Amino acid sequence: MEVTRNYIKNFIFYVLYLGTALGIPTFILLFNAKKAFCIGLGFGLVSAISITVWDSIQDEYKIPRMKKKVEKEHRIILYGGTSLMRELWKQDDANKGGGLFLIESGIYFREDIIENPYELMIDYRNIKKAKRYMHLHGGMKIYMKDGRNEKFMVEQLKIWITKIRELMEVTS
Image (cartoon, rainbow, N blue to C red; front, side, top):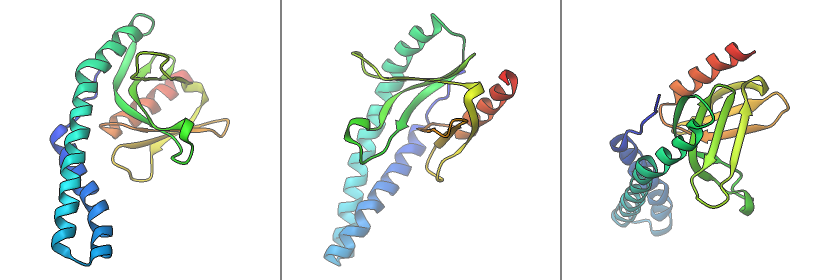
């Protein structure tokens, strides 16, 4: 089953979120509500358009290509585009865009670059819990039994968490 994006909802969210994120500091610096609103809205629109175009390219071209490769070796239960969220202060460990796949043995992430993509496999038996992450828009955090964790941004968060929990029960 494929988890699809709601481009309109995401576009509106990014315009408001990113516009506010720049509009408030601009207002504090300039103390001019009109300029702050225009700068914030302009930044939000440009950013939202860029993100929406990137997401649509990923969904139309990159994810299907990855899906074909994964299907050759595994049965895919659920899949969709995602970002693997990493620590911002570590330059060599930046966020990675790619595909997230629930397969019969675990959660599989593959970065959406062609040469030397980053891959991550988490066995369901090694997962302690899966839950919403910091009330972010689609933020999901996977806690492992060894104390590590991984954070992903996904569409339709409840479907992902429910399915992961179901698969954890079946494999334990």
